[in-house]
Image 1: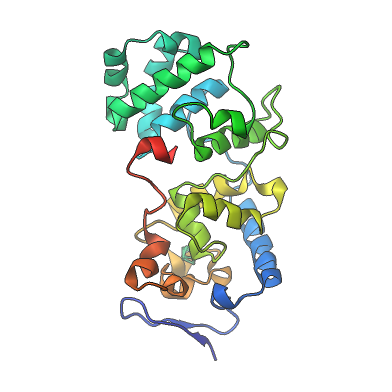
Image 2: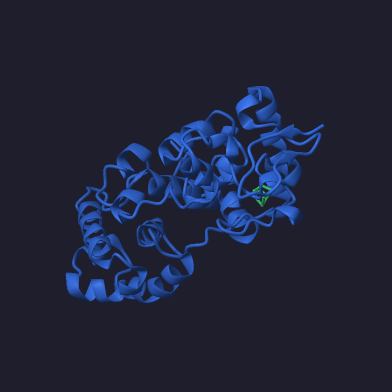
Length: 280
Ligand code: SF4
């Protein structure tokens, strides 16, 4: 017999025998074993992954990540070639007039606040003794316009791309939690919170540290291609047998502690803040 759970949208929600139970009833050991299997499947699906935001330097990745708040990577990648040719470094961008900068990044949305954040960050980096980016999470989040997600994007890229002079793990590397990672973590029963910082802490208890840089990037690719927000392809999903949300069509009934709002958490965009300054 399967594990009967609350039905969602009138669809059947009987969990097939052998399928993961509700994550609320899963032991930490069982979750850890399931996570290891998920890591293996994703590694086979995406043996090599590249950072989706085009960049040639750590500074350029920082700029692109700030621009990516509430915006697709594809749009950012259309904007940055011109932006980087005019302002290739923090020193160059620190001198940029506000209005032309806003015009350059207009299509990424929230261009007023993003332009101000870029200028403030560029000026602070340009004023540093080494005129370069700091290389620890604590120092990165102290920059204006840089939140924990952006700092983790940089440190993850440093680890994956092996940036000279960077030691991501010594620098406090965490786990990038964007809207895809948050959604996937909840659907896969690896995290329960809507708060990205809490999701990161939850993931850190089950994801091995040597996977902290690459695992979220693989989740992001998978979340874009298969486990999308509105239409997850559960019937054809290679993680179906490992995913407690699969029999519920991507919904997460075990999060339904405060009614339907929580049920929708698995497929919501709730980990994105409407304020780009808070989401980066
Ligand atoms: Fe996402 Fe469905 Fe696959 Fe689970 S089974 S990871 S909800 S697509």
